[in-house]
Length: 442
Image 1 (cartoon, rainbow, N blue to C red):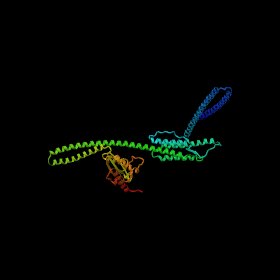
Image 2: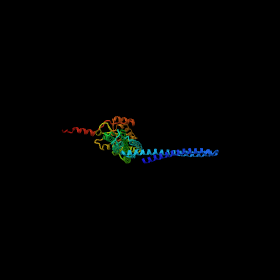
Image 3: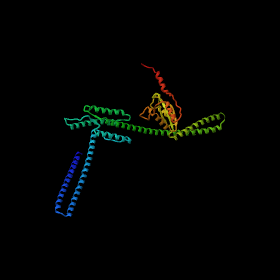
Image 4: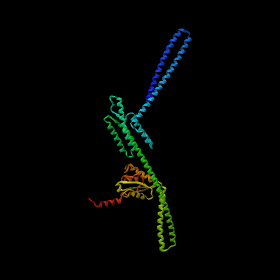
């Protein structure tokens, strides 16, 4: 690049010299022609000859002026080319300075365009600080044996080594940061920043706070992006689990409806036969058939009601039950799980939760049947979002809130419902009594 710039400067100088020589030549020619004109004036007295000579001089002057315009244009084009070459050379030097600091090449492959755009902006600011030598600075210029150029070269080597070490730690911390693991990664970068600056404090060199800020900004964005991905994946898994649950519930509802249909047919047929037999019986036998008919009527009514409920539940895809349960022995007071199930018998779902990795069964405070159970559950979760026990995982549906607050929220979003305010916690309280009676050995 430097050789090309030198050749262009030489070409420009040659062009200027050529233009100057041509101008001198033109002036000399004009003077010569003027002398010739004066001489010819004495020789030729004819006006026609003088006019011819004048026209010849005019044409020569116009030709020289055109050559001057062409040379001026050539000089201007060479000047523009030199400016472009200087800009390319400066960009090349900046890229070399960035590369010398160990800065990793950009690798943009984010799934969310908004995050990718913000990351590009951060990366551009980092490269600008590196290219303009504002990422690491020295308070004074160095001299090596009185040689300032050698001192400047060694000083730049030290600054590049500092940035290589710091950038390496930053790249490792950013690559390894996990969702909700920001604190440890930030501590690692700040520790590296302080350590590198401490090592070169005697040489009056340091990495700038501005460069630390943009590297931390990249860390914060990366952690937020990975946390977003984790949340999206959890939401996707939750949606898939909900779909599988709905399919299971739909199958169970269909099985319940089919069983209710079979029960209805069975009791209807048994009732028909009992009535026929009752018509042909007398006395105590007729009385026995009458009692049997009443029992069969009740059983038939129950089967018909079960069939009606199962059919209605299957037709309403959003119908279900929102439940409010607690587990004092496992989670303490004022911690409630607010969940939803589409099962025909919601207690079956609660019993499953009680059997899964908790030492004591759950106590039921409310079961709310509604046509849009997912919407009611979502509203309650949103109202108590800031009261979650686990803020990092929204699939954990436990909230640290009073039962009176939950009852008020249900009443505002659904309607009046009866709550059981006192948790029985039978097994937990029995355990406490047994523990109190156990002999204490010293």
